Amino acid sequence: MVEAEHVATTVAQGVHGRRRVGQGETFWQFRRYEMGDSPQSIDWRQSAKSDRVFVRELEWEAAQSVWLWRDTSPSMSWTSSVDLPEKRRRADILALALTVLLIRGGEFVTFLGSDLRPSNSKTTLERLCNVIDRGDSDGAGLPPALPLPRFAQVVFISDFLSPLSEVEAVARSYAAGGVKGHLLQIVDPAEELLPYDGRTRFEGLEGEDSWILSRVEAVREPYRKRFKAQCEGLESIARRLDWGHSVHRTDRSPNTALLALYLAMTQDRRR
Image 1 (tube, one colour):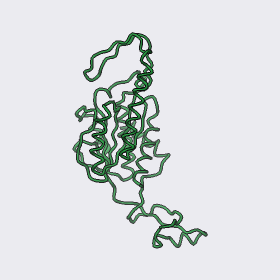
Image 2 (tube, helix red, strand yellow):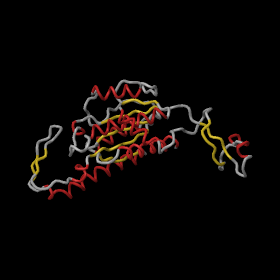
Image 3 (cartoon, rainbow, N blue to C red):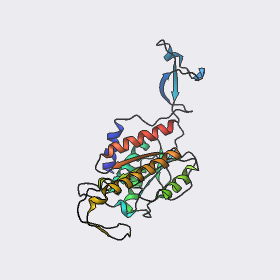
Image 4 (cartoon, rainbow, N blue to C red):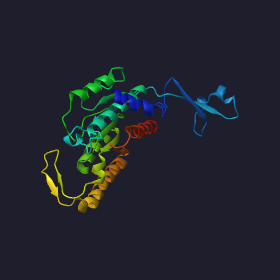
């Protein structure tokens, strides 16, 4: 939780809050008058201070719920180096850090399938951290198809190594209900690059048979093309559903991934 708070605080220094334009009573900002704006929205006092006309924008006070899900399947409990975190730990850190930012912005947050109601109270982060500590999950590689309120938002964090057809089926089940979403793909650098040479034995993490290759370098390029195709397939799924998709490698800073995700969610809220 301390690590997540640190990541969130670092990212928060570079972004503004997730305030949204809408029907509310709390002042947000002034902006220049644009064609189509209502004359009633003009702030004449502010406009009188210059030769421009300004509109007063108010914050949208109806907070919407955000549902987070992290992949807890065995494939996430892997790292190619003792110097790198397991994919699952990085997913947990990003989920909790995102929770911190969302709560600070007044959003209601929970983990999908946790049976905890969305909340933005001071105890929300601790409760979600306890869910991680207890290991309350079914170890599934894809999120469950659960009914959510219309206009809710979901964030799925996984390595997304499942067949693309299965990923799309789950994502579509949520999109059909008016839910917006983001796919954050967590990968180990070795999964992307296959940097091994010579005779190598591969052990499956989810019941697969072991596999021995006499020369790994002989399959490196076909493997990389296959991996790239998986990532591009996920991007295509997200684009068709008007969702977001990003890839994060565990040898890179979590700050960058969190910042990109947070900004993408902010843009979705303002559309």
